[in-house]
Length: 484
Image (cartoon, rainbow, N blue to C red; front, side, top):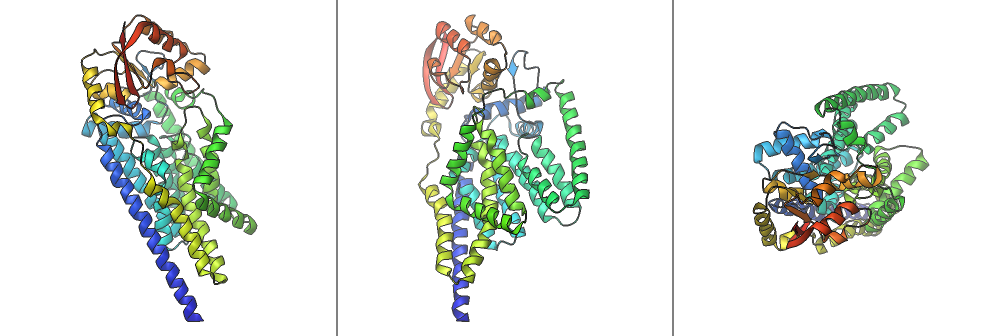
């Protein structure tokens, strides 16, 4: 009987290693594919051009946070660390998307490594730690975002590094080092509060009041100093860039739909995470994986903001992998006590196959890569049509060496529609035909609804004073308008 139990455990361990190896292979494939896509010389995401422009401005001795009412209109809603890193990459490698995309990929690898360390810290075996951490990059939504330059990756990497240092580094220095990383993450993206909140709740549950006060004081000093420096650097406009650039509508139903989609898309990870939550509640414990899962779920509420996308769920995906790997020990122990190795294997296989099968069947939607010649034609068109270009595709302007007129057009339009700003400065320029080209993601008449990147007044002026001169198959650059 003992031999049968030992054989069963050995077989389950082999199965865990098999699926961990499969997940790691898929994660490596996702990284390799992202590196290949990183060479594509044109914009793949709307925000890429805005981020690259902010970095370029810094290399030119300018701030990424100028007066938003001046001309050109430059609005950058993220923290300075992301833009400073981009500036360093622009300084080293020139104006291109390759290096910033590789930075995002590198950060994704760091996130997976942090998840491995965190899972090992909570007692997960090596195959479970490696496999569940790798599932983060087997998530097709994460695969979509890792091919582009987004500040989310740098911010989440810093937050996960802080969580790892807090939980894994022994002694009193760990939490204080973690505070530095958490503050750095906030100065990338101010909504990355889930990890520090989880750590704070963890300390509260253990009544470690001294450590709580030390972290609060250290964090307040660091954040206050950083804020003051950013305000000085920006001439007083940093505060608006961080806290005043999102007047757009909030829809709670969108957030709830996203949560439902996460649960439906990742049923086993969600189930294991909820199981860990229930067990810990019954035991009246507050494990860090569960707290992080809860805080990341709350943090994902930013997805309800108009213009948001699934990049607002990246931290929730990471928390799911962490909490599900932690919850697996309860499932494994329960089945082990009842000598139900086959049932345990079925659950483990289902957890992995629910991720790996969609991964194998999925094709990342990168339309410009299907016809790169069209983007080359766009580049040639812009180079032969003057310097003043108004567009959704800020990256196309940068790559042709032209000055950016409006960055970020979506944020500017939302400020006009919901914060009482005037779009007269842009409308008058369109009316006077001062733009040599207006490059749009679609026909002007299609710019309607809460997520439109140009105001109705601007669209009306385009329709009256410009006409379509060329069409392309490039992201955010399909219709090129020139003056009548």
